[in-house]
Amino acid sequence: MAKRILTAAVGIALAIVVLCFADTPVLPAAVAVLIVGALYELLKVCGCMEFKTHTVGCFIYGAVMPFLCAYEPSIRWRLFLSAIVMILMLVGYVGDHKKLPFAKLCEMITCTILVSFSLSGMVSLYYMSDIHGIAYLVIALAAAWISDAGAFFAGTFLGKHKLCPDISPKKTVEGAVGGVITTIVVIGLFCLCYQKYQAAHGIIFGVNYIAAAIVGLLSSILGMIGDLAASLLKREHDVKDYGNILPGHGGIMDRFDSVLFVVPFMVIFLTFFDIFI
Image (cartoon, rainbow, N blue to C red; front, side, top):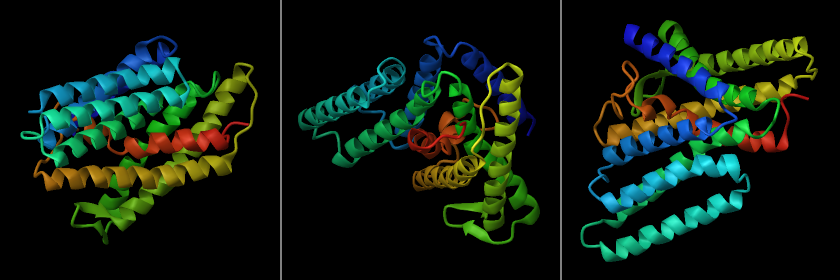
């Protein structure tokens, strides 16, 4: 537990530094590092690292995506790059089909596009608003991680009914409910404190608490689904953690698995609805 807390403290400190320089290439660069690290862990677990030409292409694609989100907001360039990468990988498959199984190719393409699009969404969240960009990013990450923490404590003290024993034996229905409630409450309190802080600096706006509650509810559920999907993949490949780069937490994927579905949801939700009005 001490290692876990220390790692979390260091991670929060680094995140604060990145956010302080979010208007510079530091934010997309930091996200690019996360994407490449997560891809490396996923592809290694899936047994794809031996196909070096293809994996290098995956890493390059993942590293470029956050910069496209920052400096070319139109999604058409991201879709264009995705199409080009898939075509090149299929061309490479034709030339290397005797060594590269089609199933492995599909795993590489799926993991690369999922992780790259999802995590680069953190950059998109920041650039969605000149005023509230950091708040949107904080809400998305908090929704994923607070849910996990709330579920842990609720499950520890109240858990009786298993949620998905075949995938994650320790998760309980009571823990899941606790995670959802905790997320809704924390996001609501964050919005209130954020509103008061900005008002003290002369920026006046309201908070749509219904929208905030919906974000908390759905983000918590999506975070759990992401966590369970990542756990299922680990179970299928008989590994405990995706890596050991984060002492007490495991790998980057072990920490960001619940973020994979939450961030894209936040981007879509905020495209149509406003939390701050």
